[in-house]
Image 1 (cartoon, rainbow, N blue to C red):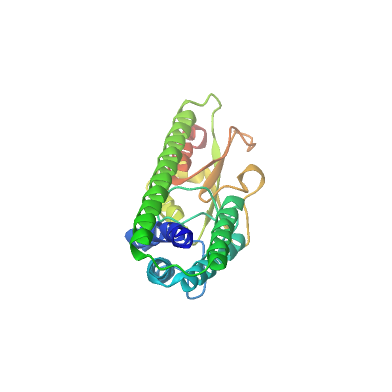
Image 2: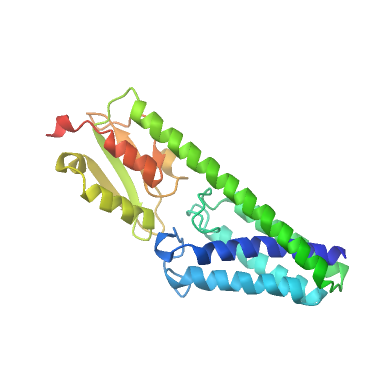
Length: 258
């Protein structure tokens, strides 16, 4: 029974993650893999399909086979998380989660540990309890992701308000983007529709696959930006996310550039 519980719990995150990727338009995902068969737009669909197949096997396969499936899946996810540290997370589709980091690696490592325990415990093939536990785990993970997404959006909205109300005048913006970032492309379209004086006050740096934004922005996802004063010195806190960056650009004092 314990082995069934463990493998069912491992199925929950795979279901939530796979469904979220399939439900999100590929062009809107901040997919961190830029080349190879797993690159966008097909990559998210392939990964989602693999996650869902893994989840089904975790529920219906005999005890040790299910445990091996979980072990392989979470070893792969832990390795991917380690390789993609610092990249924007698209683990659960469009949910606004923190960039891939130590927490992602540790959570997947915990999945590896649970799979090893299930493998050591031995056979178990009680399908009904597995389905119940898998559904419960999926609901729990989905609820946690939605709560984190809601919190991230609230924080972003608060930052936008702070940008509008900031005391220091912003005369320019140093913007960091990447070619593979859907939010960056959307931001550039918004920027193209702004008045020329405001566009001219934005200096863009396009980061390559191995590049990172400097200083305090190094851990931020793209797009991110830093406001500048009339002398080109940083002013205020750097921001990330399309909403906050757009608000920062909108706060530029354009009369100085007219």
